[in-house]
Length: 448
Ligand SMILES: [Fe+2]
Image (cartoon, rainbow, N blue to C red; front, side, top):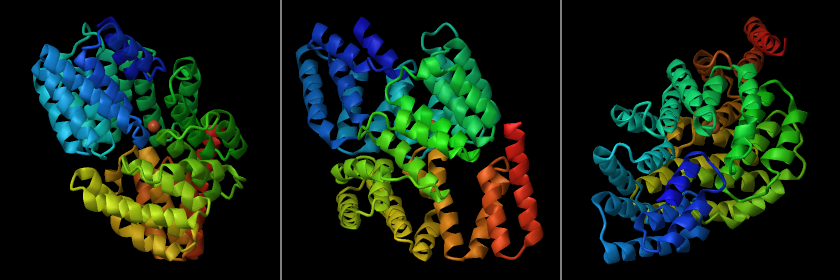
């Protein structure tokens, strides 16, 4: 159990050694059902077809162990959850984990996984409340309490309770300064509230913690790059992209998502990103038939579209539709109703068919959240809609969208800058000057 506990703690802390701890746990006890099950979970977290065989083997080994040795209800539910997830039945997996947590609210593995899947369903309320439902069982004496508060902080943030998220996140960091997820939750709060300087400081002071992480460290760099983007420090963003975010050129979906969303934003800001799309498109092309995570599919499509791989992009779109038609689970519905039109919009954007982008994105913009990912990650798609409305000279739509965005996030420099462009295009000079001033004042406030 020592190695297994170390593996779970490492998983919660995004440590590189999680898999190695688990291998040791299974080597020490080859009939350890939860060891095999956790191995399957870890492989599923990659959302990569290349891990399918390994996952199936882990399920088979877990079942064999149960036959040999029997199992508790909790263990049986875990194995059933893994099997459901593996066959694409996300709701089945969620139901099993929720069932476990009713009886075993201290099962932090079930809690983290249920949190993970709700996040990729865009179910912010359950990202928050899956944790809230077990809080009664946790207190300062319970090992792992800090991790639970870190998860709760992120859920609060995704539900828009920035004050609550900040307080709970800081509490989690105080308990465990190495809790990267808690640091990340507070960073999200700062991003959403336009607290650039505090965000940059937090990243700097905690760098010794998160730079040791697995590829989640790249996502932390990505957050740093977002803060720099608003300050128009594009050279620093490119430097971070080359030397940190994309230093390891993996095909992991989160790495691809960080990279594609950053390059897209840079190009949107008029920055020449050179040939950087090429290697991302190579990875995306190889993964273009995975369809394990709609969020990942969309970012693969961004790389293909931006690199001009029209035929591959078209084939991927057809493949997404075929995959969605085969399934009836929630992931298939999200792919069909959101993933496909969003991917078509991204392709249209790359083809400079901005009118088509607006036609495709405007009707689904309130449903984009079901694609999963954070507000910070999703924001790119909403910005793309605004840019397309501007570029297709649909200034009335652009003005309405920017009026909405500035009301929602008045601390965003991008919002005011873009609003100024829209108002200027409409001939509203006074309004444009007012919006420019707001952007300028925010920028001065950050750089003084
Ligand atoms: Fe994030």
